[in-house]
Length: 191
Image (cartoon, rainbow, N blue to C red; front, side):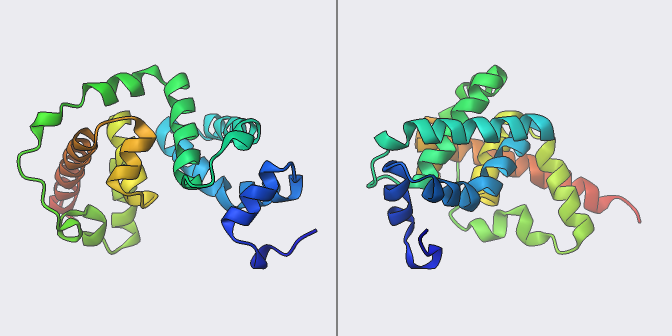
């Protein structure tokens, strides 16, 4: 048995690659909630998300010997989740492929003023935001989830989804606008 706190992620991955079930179990523990939450956000079905999560880690175990340590583990892991979701949700891949690159006219880099999350303070408003995210088309839900709920960079999202960077930015821009409209509608309701 090894001490978790003394090992870096790279050390744990290396040991798991060498067949250590303890190291792999630690990787699963460290990443299970992220995988499940992403799968749940995309499928909107707790049982399906649970099944996908288990399948993700089966695939990770099988593919781990081929994982290159110079790549980011989280990006590789999210790619596996995205591919499984594509397999189970063919509509998601069609929607992602349908996002047009040339629709972005003026993407502002000041994300903090544009992110709906920064405008919401109460738990009720937070619940409304999550409800609004759940009502986005699957492709936009994926992009918003990866960017704002998982904190991934645009480049990492492009790598995970297999989409060009401009397409990712365009999709996130559109999704933010959809969220903004829904939140403004919610805030304008009496009472």
